[in-house]
Amino acid sequence: MKIITGALHPRLRTPTMPISTITIDHVAFGYKMLDTMWKADGVGLAAPQVGSDLRVFVATIWGKKSKKSSKEDIIDEEMFFNPEILSLSDEKTIEQEGCLSLPWLVGMVERSTSVTIRFVDKMRQIRTQTFTWFTARIIQHEFDHLEGILYIDKLVAGTTIKTQGLSHDRLT
Image (cartoon, rainbow, N blue to C red; front, side, top):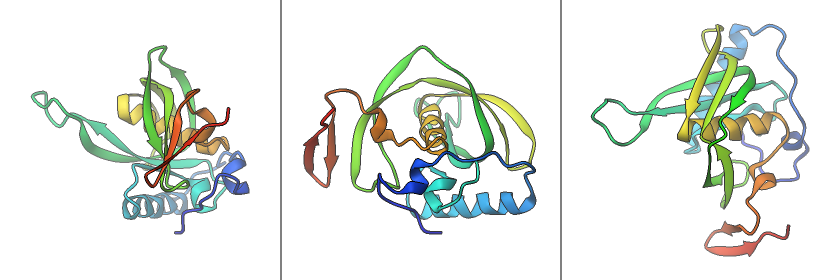
């Protein structure tokens, strides 16, 4: 799969449509997306980024491998078909984000530290789950893609977009 790039690409700016019946072919598509994400060294990927209007994204799930661990590591990967954000925490953090569709750009974005989401998983089961910290940020970023929103639309006022060692002040 080829990842679409460019902030003005119409596919990246068009909201997706729900999938009426999620089939094994959709799950196979999800696995292709995961493969594309891993090959691009990403942590999430949404269907519009590979030219599809399906309402699905894939993401890595981060957490502590043991109670003794103080750092989070990748503990799983998941497919999110027809996701609905049910709630976002009031607590927010501002962190640097990038995107596979905007290579070499990074900027500061404010996001909730926790998100509760209902979705159909890779086993085609409906789930409701709360994710926190880095996983919550990934989910919000990928969900935005399904709405035709890019992280650069949410840059913190006064932030600087960095590109290959050069800096460009945001105009708004």
